[in-house]
Image (cartoon, rainbow over all chains, first blue to last red; front, top):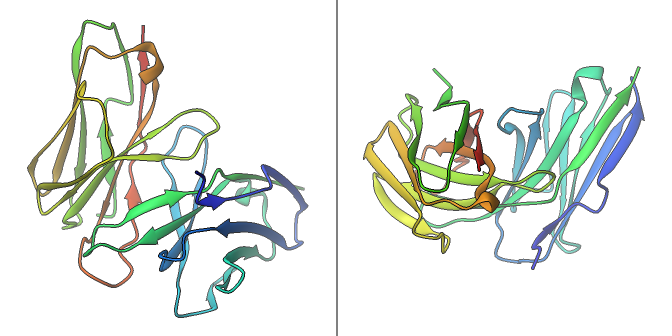
Length: 114
Length: 115
């Protein structure tokens, strides 16, 4: 049962344009959502997060949007840069007294075309 | 120091061997995690330690044995593994405080191959 889904396994975007990565979830108990970026042979790197009480969070070139009614979130990267080429994982949390079990999506491989 | 370190980087072991993976963080985090990641799959949670106590075991086979000697260290002891256990093993840590952001910081992983 895949509770967090990223339906696009790959995405190619021209440098300088906007990259939009999507994520859907099914568990209404999830209260916090995170995006991680992963290069080959490295651990995931935290990018940005959003609480379920918000619908938007922005940090530099990265913005995450949350639509709770649709159980959908998206990560916008603008402008896209070659160094953004990586696999992006969406993750969701249902809190339990401070240690969170993160459920990850299947990932989207983003390729930025120079 | 915002780093989670893992040793070794690579490990090759036979099915009868006993080995250990090590993880260390000096961020004062009180929650530490072990994940397993197979190729082209997302990380899957194995264990969570909170304040040095095991709080979550995701029905992991007993051939994997976690240990948290202190708040900065996390070990994963391996014994009698199977070839299908070959994967990238990731350690992570977070503040472990109720509420708040508590994002998890990941180490670079140990690439394990079981022959």
